[in-house]
Length: 381
Image: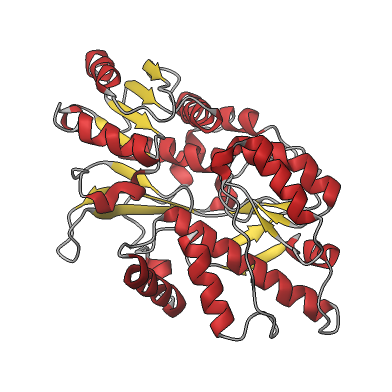
């Protein structure tokens, strides 16, 4: 929401979209799926609401899909990464410019195998809902596609909102894994890091935190933790730093909110850019006239657009192909918290299952040749 507010303010200060001021209505997903769907339908009934940006929760966006297609409202899945969302190739109004879970979690397994090709024992700790189970399945399937001898020694699924992770930490320590992979996020991730660090988990195992960039500024992560941004949205990446508009966004975000943006902020900002770009394309194709919902959907349906952190390419199935930036925490003399070093940037097109192919079947077909073809950790500088 912070990123959306900032982006909308910047667009409106510059004259809006073709002179039209953007106005946003915010819906809280915390009310549950039924409430989100009801709010979506209510907003869609007003023709002035031309575009929806929804949703974050996998359960919400998957449940919204029938309403999106029925009501024919161009809708941007800004941070719903569930690979199931667009897998049937039948979406005409739902678009995802920010990538999906297969691309994201397969990338972590590949990075691990590049960094530690001799890994043998892996433990996993993921939240007990759709994204957590997808993360575990994709990560382990990618590892075993290349190294079938790897043993999964623990596969834990604590409930969302868990405050005490001492039992899970004990089980992870007892399993003696070479690697611990986790897609915990939010307060759950913060609590886990604070409780696992003093008990030595980070020194005894290579820890991978798929959403680890979100807790860097809490200054609780040691060096050597593999972290990423579920896409390319690291505001300190070379591509982001090379763009004046990105540096301006980051500086204004820090000044306004007292913190640097994390990858959900960048995904939201990129979703707003995608929307603005679609308006420009639709109006160019329509003689400069203000577009209809259908004309906007057509403009969103294919092509590439520049983001704050790189480029996103939209396929015919409305799936966005986005590069994956992953690295390892290192200390920085310029910041009071660890940053991401030893980075790699994987081509999103290479790690996205081909259109029409079963995503998990594609994951299981990954082989060592793909691993050898990828750029090495530390190559993205």
